Length: 285
Image (cartoon, rainbow, N blue to C red):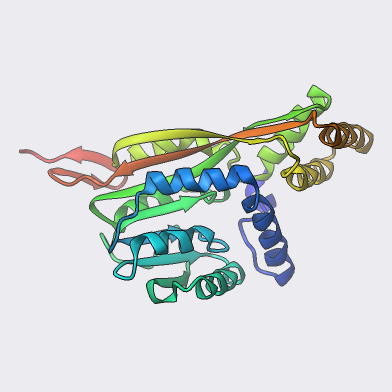
């Protein structure tokens, strides 16, 4: 299956695609679980006053704005995204939030970052690598543009961890699999540590975070997962029965949805270690 051709997030070009993506991002971003997740990732990034931070795949700019407040008036945040449409919305948010003096926005490709070596104190990306066919190249680019001693923080979900109750278990598995296969790599969360290590990052750590929904905030997301499963050929009557069970349970207060995402970070070597062509080597002392 050519998943990269089916990944709707890999190329957001038309106004309709951009609007649909923005609506989905707002729906997920407004949930209580994502609010908690953002706090966790901000703690891991630990942006300091006066730092230069790169937000790769900035989307609507929600994290860009908060990071900009953390670095203060002496710092700079660069927000980069491949989608000019999403970045236009990010600029609006930056302006409305009063941090335009410390934020620069650029349309660009994460596989070829338009910045010089060692320009940033830290690089952050969230929910980007699952949409690219060569995540190792992206991580190597992030490592390149971070100064020695600086940090790289990757945040990705492993969508195979998606759990929903109730609903026929076999149908749930088929829905999950259809949606994992829709991405370039819907399991990318489990690969973050080896990706960072292969790029030559040191002191690599990973923090798992379970997103939990008991109130039905993620029902629009689950509805979209049903639609993707229908496009993949799952029987309509099975999907309708599954969805009815989930919605009825949410109305009764008997519903649960969860998934796991991971924040993995590493430090660019500051000393005799160097990285050449994705391999970490130690120079003679």
